Image 1 (cartoon, rainbow, N blue to C red):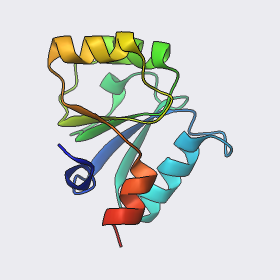
Image 2 (tube, helix red, strand yellow; image 1 turned 180 degrees about the vertical axis):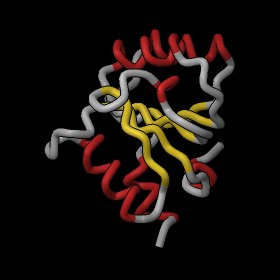
Image 3 (spheres, rainbow, N blue to C red; image 1 turned 90 degrees about the vertical axis):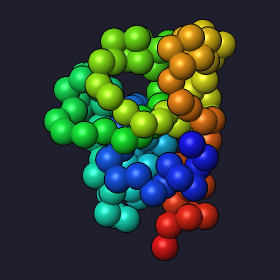
Image 4 (tube, rainbow, N blue to C red; image 1 turned 180 degrees about the horizontal axis):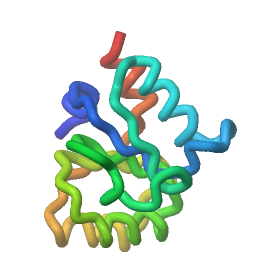
Length: 118
């Protein structure tokens, strides 16, 4: 799934520090909500992706790669795609995602919002 298709999804998990106004996870969360997306915050608000009620389309990793890897290893919730924000990637994370055949892209939802969402 390319970034344009990701931005057509409706339910997102923003994984990172969504409570700190200086963090990208916080900025992404509020910009996504402002555009009408359903947003769930994992990391500081919900502990696990499995705690998200209802359907989930996209997981946005905006968190230290070690923590992101742990959360993905624990994840049993179905989803369509993962977006790995710049700085949230690691060889270990990518190897795990490839091993599990999880669909992912390395990109930025803020770029997606500016390019594909009015």
